[in-house]
Image (cartoon, rainbow, N blue to C red; front, side, top):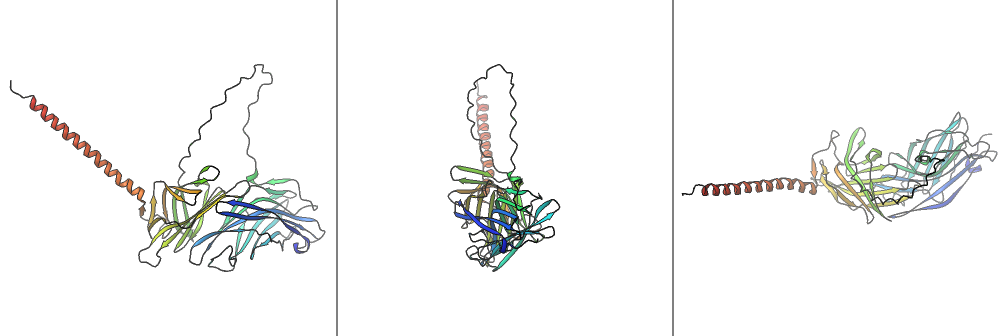
Length: 430
């Protein structure tokens, strides 16, 4: 018998909401459970998961902003299909003001695998996109990076994982999926995602069963003082518009988060992926470090109509995610900055450490900064305008050298005077 669409024979219900507390407010997302049944009323596809979307869009004044799109309590799953040997299974969800998400799942011999995801978000939803320049639905297709799963096996991923494409960041957690369910019963055999797989425990050397010497009571070890956090490694990041590089950045980044206790986090450039958007008057660089830290830097042009123009850092937003459940540990935004300004067509450089205060709980420290968000030519930095701290250092070096030379001249002069006096006293008449 062929499968029937979920409108007639499937059921879905919304589970308890998960409230995610961040520094700047509450983020609410809902889990969705979909149990699709075939014509004989047997389960053919089961899915239970949570997800959230971070979307970068262009505002009416040409700026780029990042917003959060969550599943709503009124989500539906119309159009979901069981699938068979020749037809892909489909899990489809509709939520909010005209938003939808779906995933195609194909069967291949003894395995099934997600093919591609489709997200349609509607910028007419003013609650999520209050000032979007482009109005109406926008559709993005994303390749599912997960590998194949054996039939009669359920795919499980409790820990959060991120999939990025274009201007979209998808965050998933608490995922349970089985397509092409056999005999109407969801399998108890699991395939875990890499994030859920346990790490190997250290091997404990065995003790001798025939040992007769009683164990010696050792004194408790002295507490080890915490190791200071070193400066972060410097990373090189770039964005392209078509085939041309439009944004260059070299920087070491460190986060200082103060909640229950101070937390210093070094951003590892080896695991950090750069994304963003280039524009004529605004440009945004988004950095994703190991699927747990998201940092966005937005630059703008001052006095866009003036003959002499400068750019500056206008906004920084930081989001920290819990690897275990995908919840937001901390979310902070400062859109009223006026830092790192330089003439348009130049780059900005500051080798010394700088601190960006995002809010009362979050700081971003930068090291060895060199950045150019506009008018990049030949994939190279233009002439740099240095920060005041570096300029002071450049002035201090020749001053210090001059002072040292002055002392040396004075010492030579004093030695000369003393030498002349000694020579005069040596030739007195007897």
